[in-house]
Image (cartoon, rainbow, N blue to C red; front, side):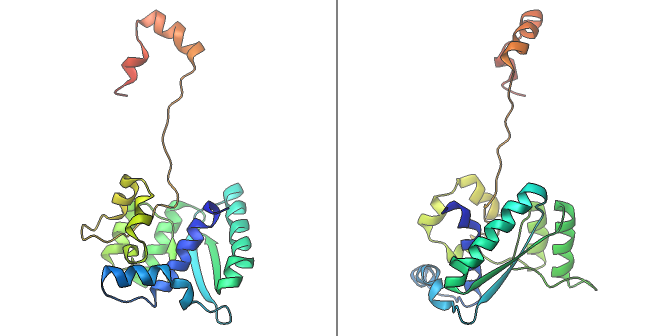
Length: 195
C-alpha cells in the first residue's frame, strides 16, 4: 500500500513547495519532512495531475486517487484531481500550450506525466519546479541512479523529473523454437549480445 501512495505523496510534497523557501540544506530538509504541518484539512490543498492513462490503467489510477482522497488526503487536507489527456502526444501538447498560456489553453497542472523531451521544452519555458528541495539525499538514494540523473537534465543540481513510472525493455527467447534455428544457422545466444 505504501508504494500505491508514492506518486500521491510526492504530490503532497509538491503542494507544500508553494510554501517552501530558500535556505540551507538543513532548513530545506526540515521543510520537506514537515510539509504536513503546512497542510490544513479544513482548508484543503488541491493538486491537479494530468496523465495519459486509459483503459485498465485509468481505472486503477482513478481508484488510487479516490482511495487517497478519502483517506490520507482527507486526513491531511489534500485533494487530488486527476485528468486523462488520452495519449502521450495530446498530454505533451496540452502541457506546452498551458505553460505558454496559448489562447484557450487550460491552467497548467501541478503535476504531469512526461518524457524527458517534453520536460526539457517546459523547463525552457520556466515551467518546471526543482523537486530536489523537498527530498533528502537518503530519499533520493532509494531510486536507481540513472532514473534520477535523467531528471537532473538542467545540469544545475536541480531535479526536474521525478521517476514515478519507469519501464525496462526485455527480450524473451523461446528456447524450443530457437534451437532448430540455431542448429540450422550455427548461431548461439552469444550472437545476440550486441542486438
